Length: 510
Ligand code: AMP
Ligand code: ZN
Image 1 (spheres, rainbow, N blue to C red):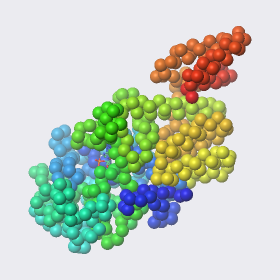
Image 2: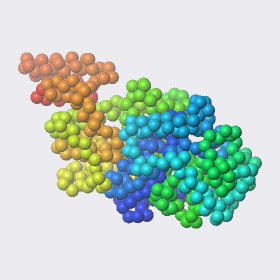
Image 3: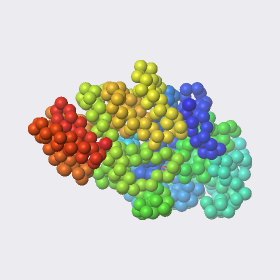
């Protein structure tokens, strides 16, 4: 089938056709490092990581670029409000760069916890101001700017395609007026490329420029840095849906205003992580976007403090398609935690049948296309890989891909070492570190005579089931097979499967 992606530009599903055959260049808007990322922000990066991993799985060379915003982002996306970085620096009595370093480190720690592959290029806005100035000069030379009140503005009336991504109608000035009230602007949709007359008395970081000493507007950094590392025309740009009407709309106007030609081919946007006050409210669709400004946000650390593994959160996110809203709840997190544990236990069991922990030891990273290459696999295994591939090629459908992975893990007719190979290959896309987690489980869990003791933590019936399993073993020893069978049927009715291993019985939930 080939990779198909939903392009926000045009709002249709499209075949992915890279500019250079076999290579995908993509840019994802990175964090503004004035505070911890919240788990809604992290949804955007798990989605981006899924794209990154999928491209490698499907055989593309790729270059993934992400910026770090450490200047210029105001509390309102449309040049309004306070400077986010400066505000935090003042509150903490630290410099802007100290704040940036602290939260950038925290951000990457979160990404590591979520098993997110580092982008190939991570670029900081403060280190690219000369690139931004050069780009603004080109925009100015093409007649798209005006100075007013000491700031340089982009004049949207000079760019006929302005707002195409968001279906904005420039005549609808009322909608624009709601965005901004800056009196210097000729149109409410105009935006700042370069600030000199800062709204803030002591702007910490300023640079010399042809328009005076000052600092760049927020949007220009993404245009300048993406073009620097990916060229003036590249394949994919991503971000959360909140970026469609202002940030990405303005990025397009600037970039195409500077070069005079198309900039990005595919625009991909993730939906929000939403938080509701309770389950009923969530079911009634009464959730609010998780955001720092409304104060309803959770960090990854707060989930860890509650006993979750960051990979539980990754598992939770993969259960929803990136273009659908996801409601956060602790019930759902508990479900994800249990399901991930069960999955890891199954993988550990398969590993045992495949030769024990040594079957898990060899870390394997797949080169582009290798994990999807079915040569050398049995017909059944090839079918699993192909089904998985079809799911992920369909606009990165992780819920379907996860169900393929689950099916494969439960299929006892697969030869264990081949099942393990399939799990590794599929998990090169899902990124749940299944093999590593299974190895850790085999090392940690008390092993009864060489058999992994499946953990029954959180199972309220565990003690009762343990007693029944024991009674069954004794019944068998006493050759009371009628009683032993009766117990097995009883357990079966409760959804419990008992496997007799050479080292004794092991039970687990179906
Ligand atoms: P920021 O650090 O505010 O620039 O946001 C980083 C990324 O997170 C952007 O791509 C946003 O669109 C995205 N984002 C912000 N809030 C949410 C949310 N509640 N759910 C999903 N993505 C979000
Ligand atoms: Zn951006």
